[in-house]
Length: 322
Picture 1 (tube, rainbow, N blue to C red):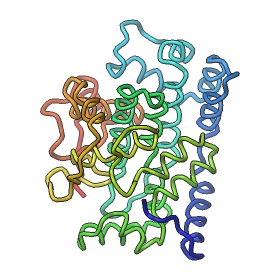
Picture 2 (cartoon, rainbow, N blue to C red; picture 1 turned 90 degrees about the vertical axis):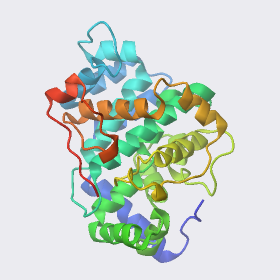
Picture 3 (cartoon, rainbow, N blue to C red; picture 1 turned 45 degrees about the vertical axis):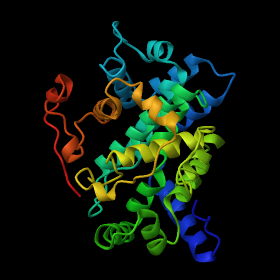
């Protein structure tokens, strides 16, 4: 793990990015309330349903996702109360948080950085984290999904709050062959996992989620899956190994994909999924389709031969190669 920034300039840069992010892109109150209710043992499922129902846009997204092939329920879910009962409080919370975060970070163009691919990577890591959690039972699958989706939040904040510095970071990665972490340190003086963890603290996320965001870049891949941190770090590595990179299309450049071995339990979890990583990738694409209401751009060499019927109804997916 990269040492936490201790010098004045780095700590000041961290503070400035977090302040600018929370001031200009506040998290919707409904998402914050959803987080707090799901962590409150005294809260009832109907309390969460009431909070989500107060947001018409979020309600529509939740029902669209609930009734899609993503979950595959035979009966139609017609209201948030039914969604909470059938899907579970924490699953609905995960959708509310993910949707709230995506909405909060409105699109700002940063040359070379594709937000669609950022969210593609994030949701893929969320689904792989969920899969590992189901196999190992180290953490709740819903919590692992949320942690996976939000693990790179700091990276997006840095890109959007300081686009010129973000573009400089990207240039160092693409032109100089630097790792993303090294380029961030050279330009910003601080890494995205610390920015993300500080943002999560500001938004009063649970401590395990904050820790998982901060620790998703360990010095070496986890040798065992013992904590939520291990789950998210391993899921991130698994996705990067598969070419599902954050904000870039690296699918045709094997030299950029890490070669480090995964913990055997991770491979076991992925092998239990029919279709493996490809199935989880397609599920991530379906999730984003229903949460964002449009077909997201995807990795060039990972586009399915034929879109599913729901995707086709919204128009063909396009690809933007960084």
